[in-house]
Length: 295
Image (cartoon, rainbow, N blue to C red; front, side):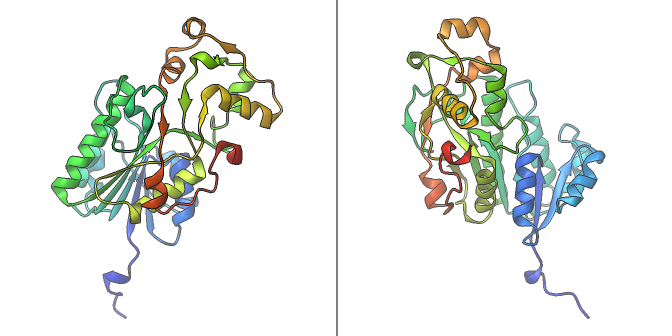
């Protein structure tokens, strides 16, 4: 018996950075794609197989280990973060260099961050707003986005960039505000507070799946829910839901003395993302449209 024509074969999806969200995507796509997952640790191979993916060992920091990625997949879901240092993302550069050798990939979905916009003074805006990164962490993401756009134009691949805010879920490590509430970490007083944006991890996984088939070419989409809350009000809500004391409120001057530079940087950027493209173009109906639903 001869093999079926290629039109009947399942497309091959490579997940790069298969952590919590990647594993949720695997559960959604099992049976619809032939699933591969890049990992730098052979010790994760058994867990990835159990989740339904064929593990591919390679390290984004070591280009020589990525040679086998050429011609391996029809689509790529790129969820790997950049390195912790520098203003560029060599990991995305190395990945794209490997994929370019045979040019099989027709679609790449990239999980970026809403931090690329910097501080927006609490403004509500859509994806047409220009990026304005103010930290090296955000600049690395802008670099990755630019490389992906170039790759799409140069190789005829459809690129979808999901700009993602704070990810939460009760079953996600470090993904529930309960942990921070239990530590007693303060939040800013209302006068100094900032607006934040959120997405439940399950809805983000569904957004990744929708983007693989529905995203327009070279398109940015805000992968966020409908919540419109300041950071302090979010943690107050979480405390009420969990039956815990509300966090103490402090001034911005006190925050500079008491909080880590990383946490302070998140408290220095205020924005409200519009998600019309997520709903209209990706046709995603959120299971958890607000954090009140998700918590």
